Image 1: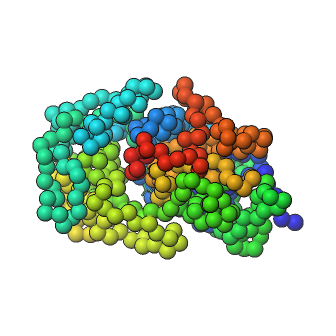
Image 2 (image 1 turned 180 degrees about the horizontal axis):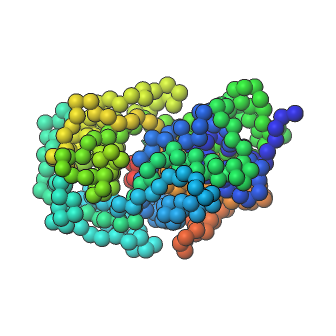
Image 3 (image 1 turned 30 degrees about the horizontal axis):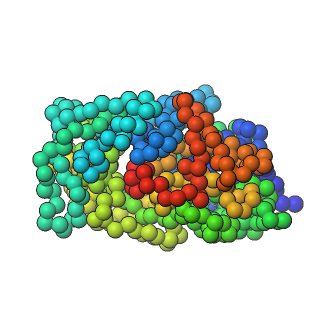
Length: 433
Ligand SMILES: Cc1cc2nc3c(=O)[nH]c(=O)nc-3n(C[C@H](O)[C@H](O)[C@H](O)COP(=O)(O)OP(=O)(O)OC[C@H]3O[C@@H](n4cnc5c(N)ncnc54)[C@H](O)[C@@H]3O)c2cc1C
């Protein structure tokens, strides 16, 4: 007899685990299938795990703000057990560089004012006072490493925005496993080391999945939360053609560079969304500065097959370290730049897809585009509510579900995350979302 559940979630990353947690809490019997040996061992484990509330769209910022209290009270979100080892959140604050190309951050200020996100405006003098090793130069546009103009600056930035309610999670893998444990306490089943190889259908709707072990699991609801493999699972289910917004796997690198001698960046550093240099940076454990990319125009995007790509760091990480050294001139660049290479599940407009599909019973939480770690708790709630909404007979494509976001007075029109939306031109078209 095949095992049967109310719902199956494909993928045990932070998104899949959060969905399984909410489904289990609401009384559904749910199984989460993960091809790796442990949850969170996909792209989540290499996440920079930055928690911030600034996004280029009002909806994006509201969703992030809604999640913030869960990171501040991680044990409360998990209903954690006494003595349980939990991931921890460090609030350090996040800067956002403002210059002509991003209209001096005006849109972000408007969004922050609209939904009460606290922020300050810092001048170059204040930047130096707060972070003495910083060069507040204006370097935009970002350049390739061999560009003779690399490192040249055009005066100083006028100002940056500082968002005090921002930080990072020390261990994204542990955070994911914390959610798995919380879900298991509510009865969710986790099948590790099992790969979904086909999506089963009966009478015009999804009926379960078959695993590489040959086993079939039955369920009237299947959720694709397979991260950078999302397009492969959508193709398996035959739902890709019905999507206006598609997803693809994008290879990215993040450099981990030692802090300048004599400065404790781990303790005294900030996070920064620094489009002026074409990247972002944050303090890293071990007194390091972590430097990622914000996809500047001069860097080609590296679309890959998620089952066949280079997992080692290359000259890209060195380039990012060089860009970081524009901000921190006393930061040495090691001969062998350390770091990580991993994948974003990027959507066409860098905004996620949290939706049903053309196959009844088949749902997707995909296209997380390098910026949805922070949103996992509420995405779990949204997907659980969406399943109830659609299985309850509502036509979500015609009348998209409206979801009242927890922790703020804002109702998210889920058309924002629809697979059949038009490209959202408000997006930054980068990891900023
Ligand atoms: C380098 C990097 C930095 C990032 N930085 C940030 C950040 O600072 N802040 C932020 O908010 N977000 C950030 N993100 C994005 C964030 O980490 C992702 O949006 C989030 O982790 C995606 O979670 P997921 O569960 O969808 O994907 P994943 O963690 O990739 O999980 C999907 C899982 O599905 C499994 N799977 C795939 N196919 C199958 C199959 N056929 N059968 C069974 N299992 C399958 C995979 O093994 C995988 O574990 C970053 C991402 C990367 C890569």
